[in-house]
Length: 248
Image 1: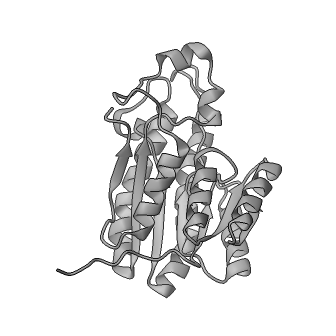
Image 2: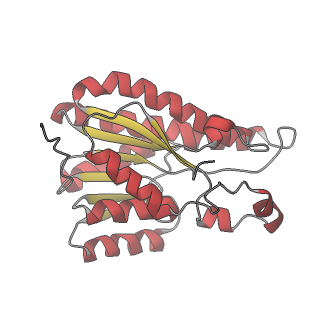
């Protein structure tokens, strides 16, 4: 019987947007444990980003931190240029950075809508566009978009967030069809609520109304990171959205 050989991630280079905390931090650490060097993107919390870089270096891998607002094309180009300058390659892109605002459609401002779409959806496109040429040259790459079950089911009072995450699923399918022939596999992961700083900072009454999956708890960032590593090592999965939602 033919044995399928999974991809070795040793000495690969990954960019993780929003990599200083929460899901991004867990992803960066999980990739490093599998031998990957990591570019940690952050926008404000430099100290947290430096902590992640130190953790990765303690594992024996290399890491750099790069400040960039991924809602801006010029910043995304800067992020990728810094990665190329440091490592001379980009193998993996994890589009993880995301924001939300809990407001009804009548109370959400146009500025809030535009900002959420810019970070969650446009930022993923900008980063993918910036790395694609390097991956095409090497005929190998992995792009993984962290979407949400909100992009599948829709969340009340989170129209911008749900729309942006649904857009990520469409972007994933389109890029997979375009880039897979070049050896670049593109997939998405759709978690339910994850135990992160974003969730813990929500008002208690809102957290009480959040849907608990049948498994009886929210997911953990490390569980999302495990699926990221799984997808990076695969050779035949592309264009898919994998729900990590505890049977919700």
